[in-house]
Length: 369
Image (tube, rainbow, N blue to C red; front, top):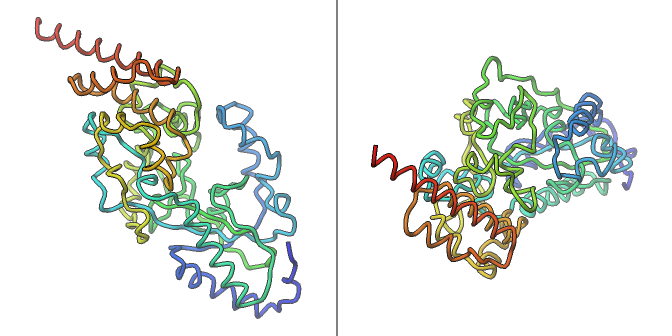
């Protein structure tokens, strides 16, 4: 990092510290806090989680060694971390419970209904850095938005932006949990905020709400069971034991957040890019399954969903169709891709068709009874 911080007076740093929330708000961030770089307790928790294998196939969680828990090792010269929040709740989207309650529709995690937040937030963080440089001159920094080995939730908690809830997501008293996080690692010796205190209390609504039991204990998540991991991070075959529980969730899962009482304070997204695109808030599964690779590329480019690729997208929808009511439309959609070029898609389509047949037989038995 370029070290210009030593030339700043205490008064100049204090003045900048007071201006930071205002500067951040001007770029669409709803909150900003400052954290120190010490993360020893969180490093120990991460090591235990990795040792238990709960990261599944997310090898990147351990690939960077201690740099994930030592910001000053990741970016030498770092002494402070600016942590920011940006709300994404799509208030105009079809109600989440209505989509989850209609097995003919595909449920997409609320954060992915609009445009990809990574680029949007990185641009906003860069604009914030430019504003800071205008105020004090060149300084050392590096911005991150899910783009490097950074413990974003721990840093946000230490910056006073919220606490890590029993579902392991960050919760803010004034904003619930429907927000994105970003970080700016800097060489500026800024006064840190007080860490946020926890306010889950005796509430544990998120634990039984998880369809696959991925929240194995308060504050403990086994990613290998999490629907977000299974539908987004996991490549290849989704374990059969989780397919029924996935229901109609075709990209991610929000169940633990949907039941959290703190989300009554959630704020609607202000940025228009977070509005639902291509009717992803309530599209019929058969329609989505009819997309070819070119359709997926054209419609999902610029979306967070684009990263998983057409094969995983199709795989996820095949599972949801297998869990859908037996109709001629559902059967035809699955049959149309029974010989799909992808062996992964073919296997999941075969499973889905078998599930449809089982459901049909059960219905016939019920009629006879």
